Each structure stands twice: as structure tokens, then as C-alpha cells.
Image: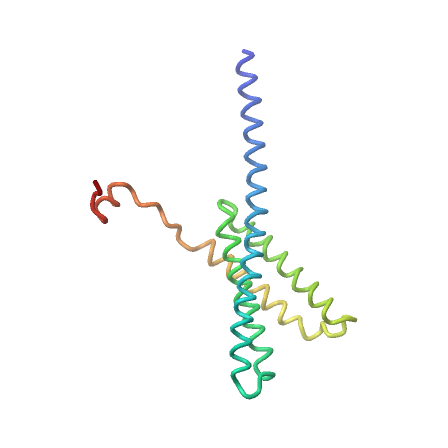
Length: 161
């Protein structure tokens, strides 16, 4: 009887540890998505800078290229965060979207100074929100590759001896 109580307690501890592991996995996936967003934004902004300065009037390309870099990098970040989340893809994408939106909003507040410039940026923030949501949805509904069985691998690549 006592061994059953112990096994029940062990099962509860294992279940609690599994829940903790799920939360940690979710946090890691969101941080991974933020890292992907930052790296892709850096690369896209460098490419955009090269494109802008190769033209006669670089100022004309400043806003469109920076918005394209923002939206594409947030899309990649949302996709990566949701893909890395495992079973909680949608939750990981939603948390990433909220954090990315908050990060962009706070950066916009800091850069604008008094906050008077925020009236025109609402559409940009909503566009970023939509890009992240699109990346999350694409990740949630993308097919998962199943590992190839040994039999199929042997048929496809030939048996190695």
C-alpha cells in the first residue's frame, strides 16, 4: 500500500516537473524568436542600407525599406518562436507577438521623445502585430516533417555496409 502512495507521489512530481519543463521550453522558444527577429532585422537593414545608398536619393527609400525589414523580421521571429514551442505553438507565438509589440512600442516611445509622434505610428504597430500573427499562424498550420523510417531510408539511399 505504501509503495502505491509513493508511486502516486512520484507521478505527481514527474507531472509537475513536466509542466515546469513546458514553461521553460516556452520561454526558450520566445527568446529564440526574439533573437531570430533581431538578427534578421539587422541583416535586412544592412541589405536595405545598401539598396538605399546605391540610388540617387536614399531618403526616399528610408521608410519603405525599414518597414519592410521590420515586418519581415517580425514574421520570421513569430514563425521561429511558434515552431520552437513544441506542443504549445500558438501560445508561444502569442507570447512572442505580445513581447515584440511591447518592445517596438517602447522603442518608439523612447525614440519619439515626448510621445507626440505616436499618432502616425499606430498603423505601423498594427502592421507589425499582423506580421507576427501571420508568422505564428503559418507555423501552427505548417505540416510537420515526420522522420523517415529505417526501411524507407534504406530504400531511398541504399543500404550502407
